[in-house]
Image 1 (cartoon, helix red, strand yellow):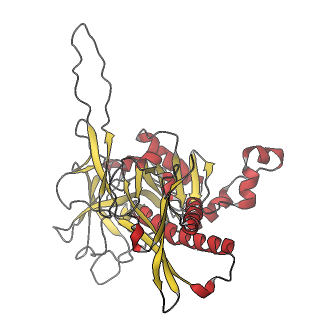
Image 2 (tube, helix red, strand yellow):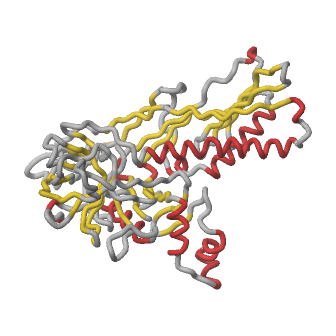
Image 3 (cartoon, rainbow, N blue to C red):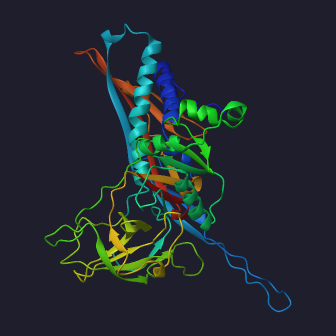
Length: 441
């Protein structure tokens, strides 16, 4: 099915939009790992596109001779994706700039548009994995929230090391534990992690390399905008994947405290799964720390904490809540995951031995199943025919990405006119269990 575009006479705008959309599909990473356009309607910035997914059910053992099965109505978890980003890339064209060939003009302009939109949009979607906004008190039902599952690439001394296959294997563990489907799993890593992972690849030569594609990987590398299958994931790289700046002083006391002692650990029952029929805790724990005076206000929800000793990284966890009611005994709530992607229990943490820290992490890479993140794109209204502007709108039926190019506002004094490309979009994590993070150097 060919892409759909505006039915008008703006041939140049159509050509630019079509080529820009092609380049955008090649460059953008996160739109290709998301569920797209799941509901019609909503065409203005700020509009919300509704999403829903069924609540999880579990079959029961039926003995029809003793009791009949009780039928209940199907239940769903509802959410919304706001069209909160209207990307624009505009430029001027002067009438005396027409010496260059049209082919070159189309190529250069479309590539510029694709890069200008793809980069901030990928950064915006990556931030969906990292940015938290949850209540500071009370019960919280986690559903369409950022991921909490973590695996990490660590060395024998418990320090983060280069991205390697252990990170992917750990991610497979925490996804499997949540019954996430085996297909359509993706990993998007930072450029640093991507370079390290190339060195972790097993070199296969000869006819075997040709048959499994290993030779091509060694020759061309993991190119930005491309995916290769490794360890059950479609793996690719993006410059928008970031990291975390560590906190070197956790306490407001005079001396720097990069770590704080753990006084006690207890199970937390305030954080629950949103779509279980019965109340089910997610496995969060409350860690009571020992502070000299008080916890620094730079420690925040959404940061990734490390638990363990100097030579043993026992667990990592995303901070979900901070309680500083008792200044010298702040309580941190998180779900601890071992570097191998296993969720730990309160008894796995040893007060008095293990310590708490906020480490520097060069690469916080993301993994997700396609159903774990949603993206919607819509067209904005085109200029009316009497406005003097021309427009072209094109939508890819496979990726559902939309690019619109408008031209108008001719200035007689400067013999110039304005061109602008637009993409109205929004994104959201739809199921935190189907996403996760891989930490690496």
